Image (cartoon, rainbow, N blue to C red; front, side, top):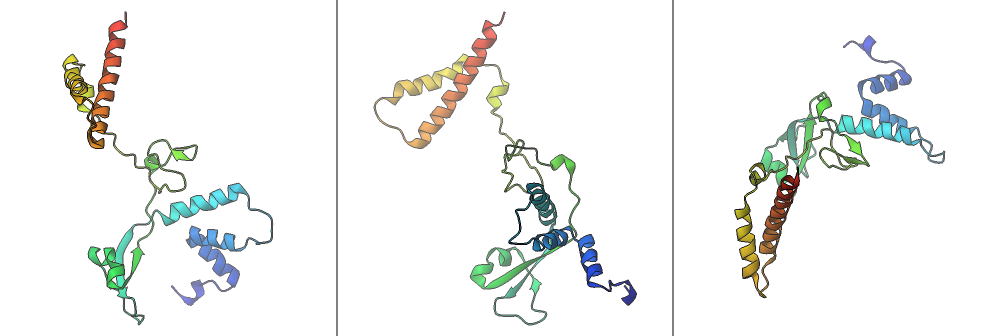
Length: 196
């Protein structure tokens, strides 16, 4: 880059910064807001928030570096490993992350918000990251099989054996989960049998 390619006026510097960094453009626009002026439009705040979320949460860490808390000299940063990052406070270290350029967002991982909650992953709109990653729902393998009335024998035996002695909360939750599963399967079985 030559000296002639650098912007010469302050306005040109601001324009070049805005063009190179959307975050810098949003921060510059926020700083121009008059504190005693009127309220900022909701659409403007939402546009700022979307820009910041997209830009700040989309970068991957290229490498972690650390320095000792009291060391402020030039060249004091060294590459950190996982233990130094995790135990930085106890070891008296300051950690920083160095980023590559932001990655390209993938449209299939976008959130689908309804009532400020993602319908796919369940994250709140305020805390959701840039990618929608739904959790895999665990499927009970018994639900794939036809209903077997013998499944009722063990829960019925538990009811018979329960007696007046209270059981611990773990067993109570386990038995409630099993009973709910059997109730749902039995209801489905009855509905199937009643169909013409």
